[in-house]
Each structure stands twice: as C-alpha cells, then as structure tokens.
Length: 333
Image (cartoon, rainbow, N blue to C red; front, side, top):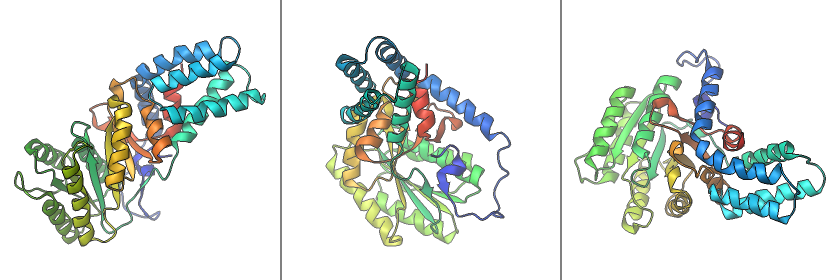
C-alpha cells in the first residue's frame, strides 16, 4: 500500500531521472502522520475500544460476543455487509482454535480490516503523456482543496509539470480558490467566465497542457449532489469532451467523500460510480468524525480503493492511504 507520495504514483522514472532531492526524513514524517491519524481517529477508536475490550478480552466467546462486536463495527460505519464478512471470518478462526486471548483476537481483527481495505490498485499511473486526472464530488467535501494539494505535491515532491483546469464555472469562489493553489504550487491554470461551459474549460486545459508539455493535467468540476441527475449527466459530458482530446483520458477519476457523512458517503460513492468511472476515493475530514470505518465500507462493498485521506486543513494533512496504518489507528488502544 502507498505510504508516501512517491509510492502513490507510478512514474516510470528510471534510476537516473531528475527529481527533487528525496526527503531526508521520510520515516520520521511517516511516524508523525501516523500519530496524527491515530489522534484524529480517536472518536472512532474510543467507540470501538470499549466494546472490543468488553467482548474480546472479557468473558466467553459466545453468540452474544460476536453480535456485540458486529454492532460496534456497524456503529463505526464499517457497514453491515463488510462487518458480517469480517466478524464471520474472525469467529471461524477463533472456533478453529487458532486464536487465543483478547490481544490475539484484536491483532487478527486489525489484519482482517486491513486486508479488506486493500482492494484494487491504490496507485495513480502518471505514465501517460500527459496524465489527465479528473476530480469529482459533492459540494463541501474538500474536492477543490484536495486538487490544489495534489498539484503542490506533484510539482514539489515529484518534480512534475502540472496544469490545472478550473472547470467548476458555477462557483466563483472555486476558481479563486484554485487560482490561489496554482500560485502556491507554482503551476499554470486555465479558467473560464462564471457560468461558462465547463467542458470547454476542460478542453482548453488539455489543449494548453499538451502544448506546454505538462506531465499532469488536473481538472476540477462543480460540486454536485449525487441525486442531481442533470449535473451528473454534465459530468459524464465533461468526460466525453476530455476523451475527444485524448481517447484514453481521463486516466484517473478521484471522488472526494466527506467521512463525517458516514453511510451517506457510501451511497454517494455508489451513485457516482454508476454515473462515471471512479478509480479512487479521497476520504476527507477524518479528523472530525466517529465514523472512520466508512473507508472500509467503501473498499469492501464497492471495491473502489481509497487512495488518499485527509485529517486536517494543512498541506501535510493530505496523505496517501495506508491500509495497515489505518486499521492500526482505528483499533489500537
């Protein structure tokens, strides 16, 4: 699983490829992010911890034990189907005599949750010339901010040339926000008049990005509710416009999901995936929720990999998703 930005992206760079100097302290930073992740999942972990302590560490492992464990995981928004699969496997292994004691059971539960989260390919392929990444999602999920942060990391940590396409033409603040990020990241941006055709902006961004030899083109789109059929149809149109420029593009479509919405986030992901091909999830606002299990529900029930997670507003608070770290942060006491 991806642990660092360089692990998240498939670049095809050879050993002598030019890139910014590698981070001299990647392990220290990774440990620091794990601490923040653990702190920000505290609400979820506290809700789970008491029940796990009561079920797996105390008393007999009977039918009531497994029911209580299922209830605790469902309350953390791991999802009913996903929970049934995980608890069923844990119960089966416990009955077979392979697990003894609360620590062994908790350790195996952590492993099962991590395995569940490892679905599909959690990387992003940048070997296209250029690579087109489309950002989609509901208003307020942090979509535009996420795009800006990705642009910064691509340029400053991987040495990639980036073009931003501000195809959210319905919200003036979105363009202003992206212009701020473009300036911060040191990358060019293509914009359009308020209310103009977003497909035209996406088209222009790709035309200009190709003309300037950019490695990556990031296209923002208007936030929309998954129940707004007309806007979802427009999103499909943007994809078709992009494909006319480059038949295999967009090469990656990332959906931002607000973790605080719990199971509604799962419904959003399902309906967006039906409207457009979703290649990965960016799970944001994990710092303010007791529903952190939604990452596992999306991966387990939809088979869409979570590729990035956000645990705060700072630049370093957006990180590649790591299933093992996430499961440990979710359950460790």
